[in-house]
Image (cartoon, helix red, strand yellow):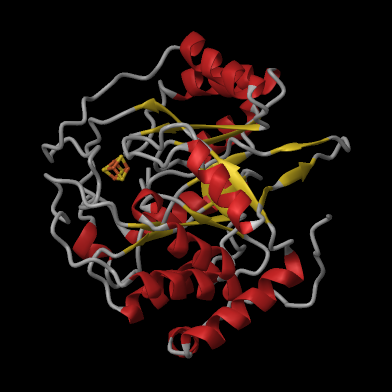
Length: 344
Ligand code: SF4
């Protein structure tokens, strides 16, 4: 069945926090009904995009994101690894293609790539592209020149999360400013690449601050093509270990509001899915989530077994989303960009 896409809901970039809070305050069933209605205007609700990501450089990051096991300063047991070799990346990309992948995302735990890293990553992008795969990457903050260089190498998508609301940012990260994130996103858009951009909830923020995260995403000059909504994975050794767990219904409310506010974006369940029950995931799909991570390790965070996901899909009557390429061929989009909430 083809996706039901039309232009019924105009895109908005002028959401006020009060409007978003009013949405999130709706009775739960009313909020789900509204989100489900918007979802159906643009997507087939029986289809969910399935994605994986390869970490090409893990750990040893100089940033201090309070949620992240890859930050060098926290002792989480994550071993720092150097940038993978081109050949090793290509082996993974070939395997992904053989498994039916159309898109291949490379993630590196950097504050930002050094200029000397760009040719190495550009070579990966060119060679992965030459295999006939779409490319995406998440490498940290980019200058305008770096974004242009990656685009010239053939990069299609760039993931860069805004983490949390502007007024909660200083509680979570001290080594960069919220504005730094917006600047990189602007460079990515200006270079002509598609954006994947979301954040993390359950870090001790208030509902108003969750509304603030969604406000910042929806009021970007262009809605991100993909919006990963991560639920905090508490890792021993990070400052956020021991944070009070977010009420699961509050997570669903956040998903529903994201769907209503960014009706044509892919709303993705990312990190934290492995701690969600099947029933909670089903509620998220009903609230308009239409993308998940599947299979490949999601950076350093365990991901539910692929077989379990497929069983859940069958129980819910959900199919992996098919992507129609410009050339007219159809394939399953099983490798895509995003990460466990790493803003890099
Ligand atoms: S989230 Fe990304 S930028 Fe932050 S510490 Fe982890 S790897 Fe570094």
